[in-house]
Image (cartoon, rainbow, N blue to C red; front, side, top):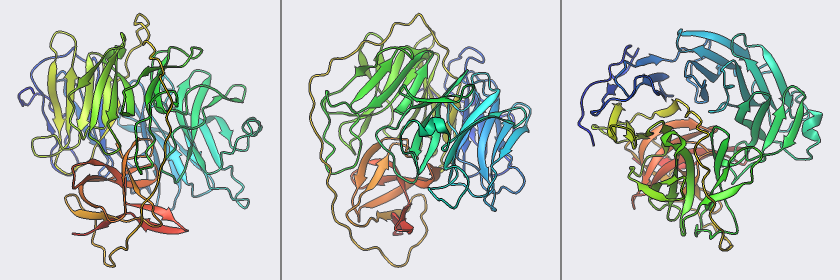
Length: 509
């Protein structure tokens, strides 16, 4: 690990809270080759960092009038200059705002009419490539004949004026013609290119499925079709290429025991929109949890675990089909590719136990590990945006791997135990016990959201320690927990249950 030296100076001080500590190891990258936006939802703090020592900026996200809580659903434009957010006022009025990070001012907004909504989704692909348009999904309500609004909508908005350019509703004849039931879902935009918006109908209020339908909408004609891999899990793109993870019966499936984890066992690859889908990575006895491009698209980083709850490991797959182990801390769940390596956020890897942003430079003139930034212990930050990788059509495709066989899978739940009557507050560093009913188990994921893979699950009565949190995601509140046997991951602290609310993490001191 490179020595700790102060080289990255923040241009602006935070409005409140302790100073964030920018740190960097020795070595200099090309000026302006890429940058990072980090975000802390609890305080609304945003930090912009460069790996070459260029001064970065730290600011607090301004909120529109009447809004008091900082948003979790955010998106940053491909050039890193615009930020979109779903914000909701205490009066339950939701607005999608676009903020100009370079000019430090609000640029445009769209207020959702009709009152309270169930969900609003933004993602990494919500902005068009030129940043002039924003696509987002809204879930107005669960099926309710008395509510005249459609169950859900996908909206394309002008980022300069806030005008709605196109709208697709659940009641559209093009959607009805598909013959599918998308009640109780919220659209998640997974691709936005000129003339096409792709989205997945995410089942709201659930902990996620192994995959969703892939819907492709052409706003100009209004046509909607079921096409492509856009409803797959851990979807990532590089130029015309797309990768994702899935469960295939023609490959060995790792045992998941009595857990509801999805036994993803392959990384899939498509060279372009019309190319055949092919498996490119499988590891016997391992569950595949994530896949994403790194090193300027030369390799793919893949996270696996031996069994649900087993220690995660990160691998790098090259375009010759070879794989090598990446030496990443077990708590790392967010990795993004850079032109000459990758960057990751270690939730508690800093010198005082706070989050640590690390650059791993694997190619070029100065390969090595560089500590870019750290923050106070107990704070949770998102790796919100990294400069997208530039396509390189000269790179060869990844070779396919051959499927050997097809085993099966069985899931069984255990029993439950009662909860204590008096409940102290959940706090970082405190102890808690898992609480479930009717034999259910609490799913523990690799990140704070239902889009992250299930690593393992815990039966009722399991003691845990709260390592970090809370964090908002997918309509839930999440805590980073550690079990007595050293397993770690993110779990919700409560879920809807029989018309009420069931607290799933009970503080014990």
